[in-house]
Length: 56
Image 1 (cartoon, rainbow, N blue to C red):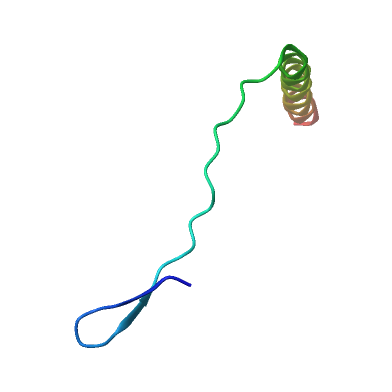
Image 2: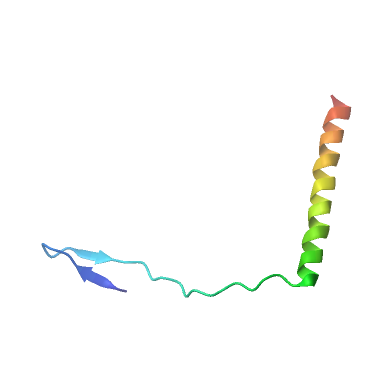
């Protein structure tokens, strides 16, 4: 643990920082999956709204 001593003898404990990495851009296959999931989510929400309107 990286402790530092401040004025007056108080200890200060800093959190350990995680290692940084650069994210890779999505592949064509991942983009297709995101598109399909987005369409499914829109259909689900639209269906729920339609059911709510039909019931009321």
